[in-house]
Amino acid sequence: MNIKRYIIGTAIVGGLCMMLNAQSFDMALKYRIETSGNISNGTYAPLWFTANRYGLSSVAPNTGFLRTGLSFHKKLNHGWSLNMAADVAATTHQTADIVIQQLYADISWRCLNLGIGSKERAGFPLVKNTHISSGMMVEGTNARPVPQVRGEIKEYVPFPGTNGWLSLKGHVAYGIFSDGNWQESFAFAGEKYMKDVYYHSKSLMFRVGNVKRFPVEFEVGLLEAAQFAGKQYVHNDDGTSTLVTVMPHGLKSFMKAFIPKHYGGLYNVEGNHLGSWNFALNYYVDSWKFRLYLEHYFEDHSQMFWEYGRWKDGQLGVEISFPDNLWIRSFVWEGMSTKDQSGPILYDQVAGTFGCQISAGDNYYNNGNYLAWQHWGMGMGQPFLYGPAYNKDGSISFKSNRVKSQHIGIEGEPSEEWAYRVLLSYVRHWGTYGYPLDKQRKQFSSLYEITYSPKQAKGWHFILGMGLDRGNYLGNSLGGILSIRKIGKIL
Image 1 (cartoon, rainbow, N blue to C red):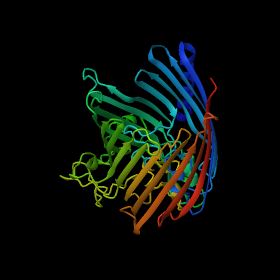
Image 2 (spheres, rainbow, N blue to C red):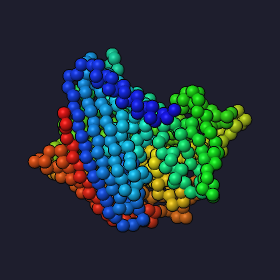
Image 3 (cartoon, helix red, strand yellow):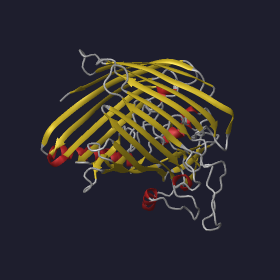
């Protein structure tokens, strides 16, 4: 059975049945038409022409797409609602000529939501300003959506009996990566690739505070994700492929993805697991909002539970939301480090053989069985850890995952018709512990973008941007990008 087709078919049929059998309060059918193209020099396009665009982009210069979609929303009786969307793009110089970017149905009842299919989801569960943030560390807006079945509480819901002082939100999802054929075509002779890999993620976040009574909120929670099941192949010199490994894929594997369990008697757990502890402190004063957040990344128990008494890897961010003014609406600063990875030592014991265990050399986003935490060549998390799409040797891996970065994002609306954003990023690279770079490499990436939304042409948006990259890792690049978008209602 083709799981992806089953998920999509179930979403469409289930959604239509609910729509036809329930009394409606209101209904909306919207359309979206968009075209985008960029021209640049250099080996690669400027980073911000590629990163955090849900994978509908390319690392190559001189690319574009034509995109069209429909979305349907309907409110039903007794707190029920239905949202559906289909979104397709024709591309040039990207990973596929035709891309089904979104195809999903969301069925909601009050605070609960069941989503089925491929959907662009912003940062969750730790909310960031995705328009100017550098992105999430585990999964965010950098890669193409993974088809999945997802149960969630999207927004914070007050816990009963706490008078609004304690709220929670979270999700559980299972899906399947859709890039197996792309990996097969991308991998060179001698390189490994994966097919039929399953996806799992879950989160739980708590918020303490009631801004109606006190202007401070604190958020804390956990996000955990995994790759499991699947088949590993290797390309032969004659163009054929050899099946290397069939990963466990039964019902127990679904349970072990939810609660990581040891595999084959070794200390290592089944599947590729990673996650982050998430913290945020919000302070409200007049029309200002100050938000301080920390995303601590981990790939094993030592970093997850502070076994070495240190948390050196993660992203620290500050966001300031300004009162209404002509020039600045939001400002973001983010500093990130993935350089430590619990240290360079790598030693896995056989469970119970020794009295202690050393877990280091975590090799972020890379995995011996599942190769890389990526989808269609783009990293699922931070774009500063450049994905396999940048590799010229056809390997499904991250060549440099030990980085330190500084990022600034600014956006504003000088008028009702004009808006802008500026992204400035500086990243230092050391390669990996196993394959360090010959020297420290540096890369500066920037985007300068304006948006014109004329009053007299409602729903039209004209977006013009310039990207400038300088450095000795991805190299130098200068280019321009133009996007034209029309959004409107049919019903």
